[in-house]
Length: 366
Image (cartoon, rainbow, N blue to C red; front, side, top):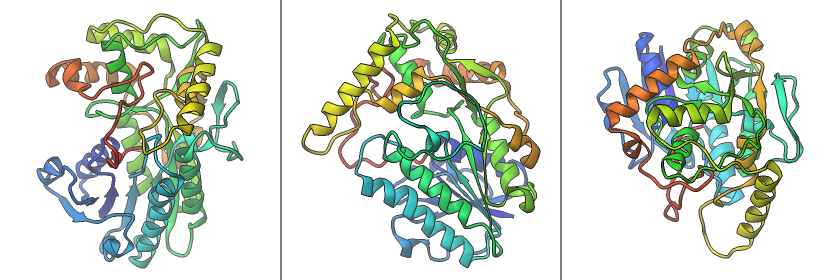
């Protein structure tokens, strides 16, 4: 089969391309003009096509000859207008769905996120499964538009096109330069990451990139259409992770200072709400706030997800343990030249991205 992959120049998308190639399939990668495609061009079995989800005309014929679509591209930053997020995450997905249907692709797998179900103001949530409803309010436009796009994808199932959504949480692993982990490690390396646990466990589900790729591969290639059509699935590592000890372990393995000093949760959450409120009132185009309610929720709330449905319908079983993944990550960082080479871009005290030039395009990642 030839599979169309969006977001192939990003972290997850690049690993997904590798997974399909290892399985003996061909990949057509949809890339934007100006993207760094040097790695993709070096891979036998990859066809590059230039297009943009914001321009319907550029998608004409892009799915022709492909048996399936794996859609992982998204606007994932915390800054931008609602219109920009809607165009990238919702309308772009609808355009790609229509292109897949016109080309009789057969299957459309959307890489969504548990953030589509996060509610402002709620507390810890453990063992969340797919029965959890969408919220009425979201933290930000990223969360809201991922939810809208996911609902469109699931509602499009039928009439020859099988659709489903995957919700990997906290994807981590080698070749990630823009995700949550390099940002947090960069902040630790700079001595600017406080311990936001408040002295309490922050239990989270994370997803090693190899496990996310396995779920994507199964959803596209082997899962029965009658089981997965119109459904969404949480995807995560086998282990539940206590976030702040995990970050301290990584710091020790990479020679960074651990998170500290410890800040009470109520202080960090109040600070985030205040900073976000002030940030919204500032004039002019900006990057996202240095700290937000959304980023603080990710770092201070316990959130774990039940992957039983993915096991039942996709045959998903995590292929990489946390210990194996951490060993491989440490080896990769060492081969890269150490933490400074891995975390070249600046970070804020809470691990959020530093200033990005106005108008810069987000990385095509989840």
